[in-house]
Image 1 (tube, helix red, strand yellow):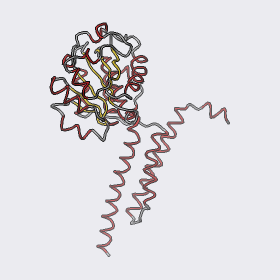
Image 2: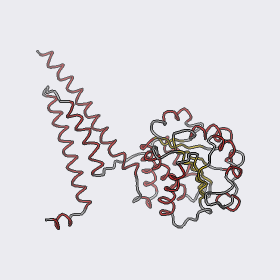
Image 3: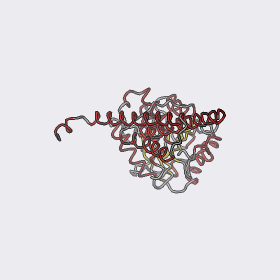
Image 4: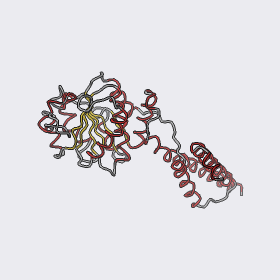
Length: 317
């Protein structure tokens, strides 16, 4: 018997688990609908059970749903796509580990896109804890995904610089003054990826990923507005509503939460087949959210049907 279990591919087991889960949830919802139409009350603990199942099932048996980029996300994708090859794109990792699960997937997706287009990418961070996360992305996305690229020539890691808004206030006029070397102590003037960049005004695009302070808002106030530098944002879902007043005049596009990351990943896979097998944490994490939201919407429909059926029954009586 153990040999039989080992001979079954893991993918097949996941498919079976996924199918059984969907049948169980779908069958249960139909049973609830029939019960509601018959005027039976449904215990609220049953609703809690269905929500728990709809969240747990996509985690245990990975489910992904198709995503279509909304206009606010597509604007960022189109900007990266439309820049001429060799353009200078700065990606700032302005977040800490607590925010990383939500925003690091979007930083990775934009990095893949920019490097695929042949842009020179400048990495930096305004958060002390952002440097470690930046190093992690460089290893997983750049070193492993683009082994043909050369650090210093195709991209550069400037690392973390203390000073919050003061850093931005300096690099808007003089980049070298704040970053005389990169993280490897290579002199600024010796780094080919920084050739022609004397200030932020020489950048073709700045992408701030984060949601705290300093972050997107400070990039807009100290760099985007005074330097007329295009700013794109990737922020946590809870912060996204605060950024919409700046869109589209001061921020050309916004990736909001894991939904924004999933939309960007979907757009990237759609146009770049080489990334079809890449890790897509955004799309993966949208599975539980999407299924749970679908179940909640069905509960709302069932609840309304139950209300009108009960009302009609009372009139007859």
